[in-house]
Image (cartoon, rainbow, N blue to C red; front, side, top):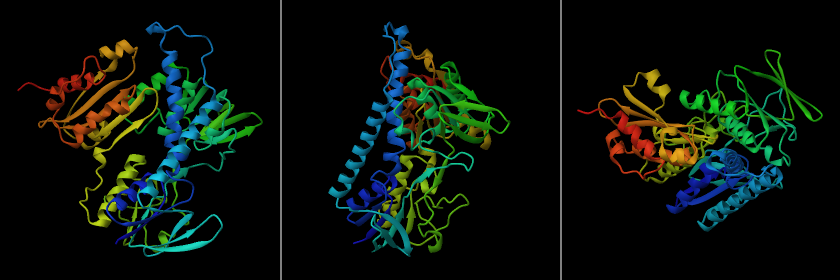
Length: 457
């Protein structure tokens, strides 16, 4: 029987453990903080739960044109919201632990590290150590928020995204530093909850790594809803003076608020794990180097999730873990294909993408046909009072194969699935166009965009 040892109980670790156990392996998984890792306890699950409340308030605030008469003073009780957030996170963590146990996985609480070869050492909360001899090791230790020497969080007024759930009152003025995915999501959430928000972006627009049309749409929405977006503004320092937080920019400007959320990126949890000492190659940022089947440079040692920096999504972490176990156990292996990954940014409206991006088409000179339609033209969108958003599709010129897409709108995370299926199964634009859609429905715009790309013979 193959013995697999896994360090880290997040999506990469626990999904790998379940797959390995299902295929008859002996599995031991070690987790330091709680089952589900930061994804469940402090990151994805809590943030999307907070965003769900903000979305409800946003929909209520924009429902006047639907004939809804609103009482004055509709607001969220942040203490209750955050209590619910943390309760849901703990409940999901408990469910994951129960599922691992019922699947026959040996679960250990403690800090794991690679001792030598495929042997790991585990230190429990009391400082006692034990060793586990395995045939293969999977490292899935995740990442943590990056901070700056000139911007140190105090957990009260200057916060990382892991610390915001201790707030019991809505900030008067939340300054969000960083306009990547995390910064944009939290800026959107606190704006929806009713706080004054200033978003400090070091680039010329928010979400600089995303589709330009999508980023422009979101920035327009942010500004229309009262958010102050400071483009080309780099943070120099953050300081607290009593109940006031001062963010000093590199050009000398000072922004004052009640709270500051630091969204400066992530640092992999790879230090102190014995990786480099045992032949595991790390890049300059400390991320574990892996190939498309999750192998590291050390024999028998695999890695998955945010600690690899491949694409920091829970879905990718889980897939990396599954692929690693398939490779270890001799099952059919389908190497990770990033061109098939669908992802979503949970701003309001959401931004969902899959496949080849506009940037890649432009930079690599890919011959592609592109069509885009605004959701405002969709009958269902009109009924629901939706004005912002669009559907964009990319098809390979000649064959008509769907190679990518972008959807901006309410529940874009759900709408993108049909485009994801088209990309992963190499459907043509005509096949997407000819599939029946419900009338009226938001998904009808996906088919309509496909019809716009079709060129008669």
